[in-house]
Image (cartoon, rainbow, N blue to C red; front, side, top):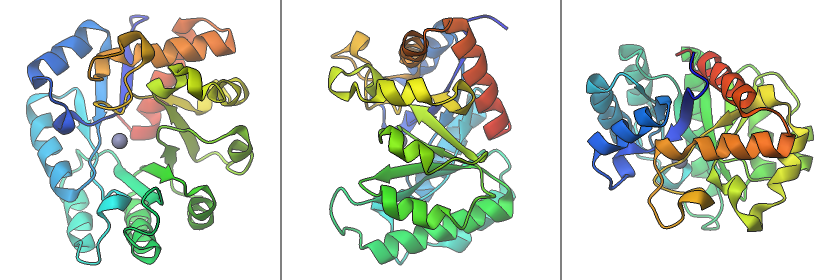
Length: 254
Ligand SMILES: [Zn+2]
C-alpha cells in the first residue's frame, strides 16, 4: 500500500458545487482512494447509491439527519432499503442537534434517532453520529446501544467526553476543524485519544482545512487532518495514514 493512501470517512458529494469528475479525480491524485458518501435524508442516500454505481471508490450511507427528523418520515422504508442494498455501509448521519433549540422538537429527534439505532442493530451496520449541543442527551440514548458500532463525526467536544465513552464500539473522526486556531482545545483530545480510535474525514463541502482557505472543501484535502494528528501526537504521518485507513476499513467493512 502506498504511504499516501487515505479514506475520507465523511463526505457529501451531492452537496458539493465542484464538478464531480474533478472531485473524484482530485481525490485520486491526492491518494484518497475511498470515500464514504454520507446522506442526511433517505433520498440523498438513494442518490449517493446511484452515484456510487459509476464510482466504486464511493461507499454510500443512508440515514435521516436530526434536523430532518419529522413524524412523517418512513422508517420502514429505511429498513427495507438496507435489506435490499448491501452497498449501504452505514446508517448516517443520525443523532441529536439542539443548535436550533427545540427544532425539530426533542421528542421527534429522539424517536427518529432511536428507530435508526434499532435498524443499525438489526442490519449489523455501524452508525455515523451527528451531535451538536447534545452531549448529555446523546450519551443517555447510546447507553442502550453499546453493541452498535458508532463514530462521532466531526468530533468537537472536550477531553471529558472521551472518558464517558470508554467502550470498544465507539470511534471518533476529525475534520479540518482541527487545523483552526480557535479550536486549539482539540489538540488535547488528539493527544489523549489512542490513534486506534481515530478516523479522518472532510465533511466536504464544509470545514475546509486552513491550508486550503478560500476553497470549497473536497476529499483531496483530508490529508491535512492526518498531518495535524501526526504533528500533535508527534508520530510519523505514515503511521497515522496506515492506522486510520485500517480502522475505517474494519469499521465500515469496506
Ligand atoms: Zn456531514
